[in-house]
Length: 225
Image 1: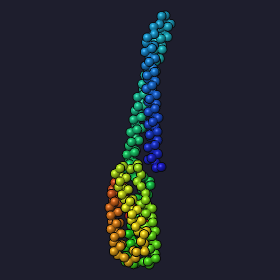
Image 2: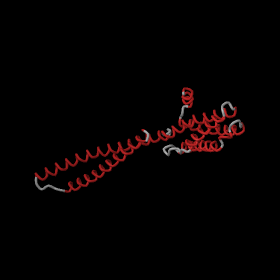
Image 3: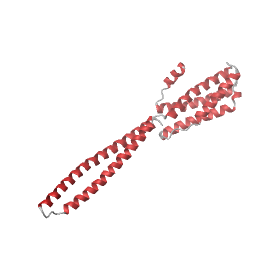
Image 4: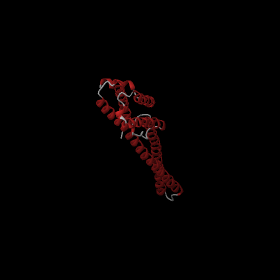
């Protein structure tokens, strides 16, 4: 569970608690109002009795004022906690979850590495056994990350874009795993897969734009690794 998710949970819990305290104050207010009406009907027959009733009315009036302030306080606090939870939830929906962030970043590097290996297979610049092994590994990893589903904490638009991206990655990896022996020196097959990669990069670009992913930082991290 991310920090944002924990924050949302805490704020919602506080919203419920403050809301319950608000309702309790409302019930107390109803009770005090009822007592005040009953007390107003009473008439003291002696001076002592009148003083007692006067003190009770004064005390009851003080309780009503205090309870009114508490009721207003808990009402305001409830709205503040609820508003805060909605604000954090909105921020969460416009940010990648920890799992999605990891998948998107890893998939970015895997896709680039896969494209590089295909280019080497096309030009036969390395041994066939080594390239087949690399392509097989990358295809398996791409399939693994492509099998993910977007977190339901994202907006509907975000889920749609992410799931489209994941599905394209899954299809690419699955298809590549079926024919790793057919890449070496096969320019026509490789060209078809590179077209798929470019199409996936189009989905990837939409993910980056929506979630403000810094591709330049990823490229820098790749060059420094």
